[in-house]
Every structure is written in C-alpha cells, then in structure tokens.
Image (cartoon, rainbow, N blue to C red):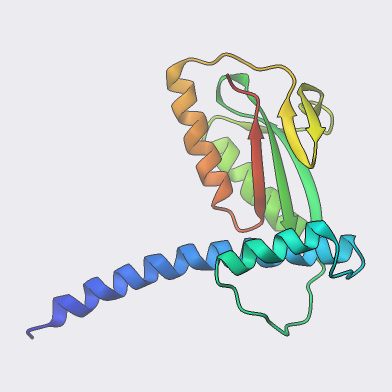
Length: 166
C-alpha cells in the first residue's frame, strides 16, 4: 500500500485547482457571450475585446460551442448591518440564480429587496456601481459582510457584488 496516500493528496490538490479554474472560466465565457450579444458580434467593440483579453490572460482556449441564452440581471439586497448590495448576475436560468442568492443571503444575515430599494444609494459610472452614500458598520458586521460577498462571488452566475459599506 505504499504510495496510496501520495496520489490521494495530489488528487485533492488537482480537484481544488480545477474547481477554481472552472469557476473563473465559466464567468469569463458568460461575460464574453454577453458582450458579443450587446455589440452584435462586432469583434472590434472595446468591451468585447476587453472581455476576450481577460479570458486570454486566464488561458481560456477558443471554443466552438453554441451560445447560451444568457440574461444580465441586477439584484438588490441588504446585507449585515443594513449595507446595500447590488448583485450583478449573468445567467441562463434566472430562477436558479435568484434562489441561490436568496439562500445565501438568508443564511448570512441579509435579504433580497425589491427594485429601486438599494440602487438609489449608488451611481453608475463606466459600467461600475459607485456608492453615493456609505453606511458605517461595526467590525463584527464588516466580517460577516466580507464573508457574504465572498460566498456570493463564488456562485457561478454572479459576476460582481457592490456594497456601500464604509
């Protein structure tokens, strides 16, 4: 049985690396697909070129798979300490995406809110959500918030999470 443990250790390391790589790949492929649809397939569009360059930096190969019907959705939520969250999602199944987000929010002291309930606290500049007003939160809630944001970003469909915490 010598060597038995060695392979299992290598296998675990490879599985962890492959899982991380798979998440990055799926997010970037969705981003490229969305940008291609947005610009009508114009390869010279700056947003599409930027998305392709991001993918090349991560060593994603060119694929010939048929495109999915992806939809860009913005969800608004409140996190720990009353912090406003804007969650940008790119998904082929919005029911699955919203359920995953609701579940994570409820487990981590947050809740999904209606359209317009959080977006007023942000301003959109160059496709980025910038907080217009910030909310001071205690250190304990700050830790909970950072954990929640990490968990949200680990969902395949979630592209970005923006918060208005100080």
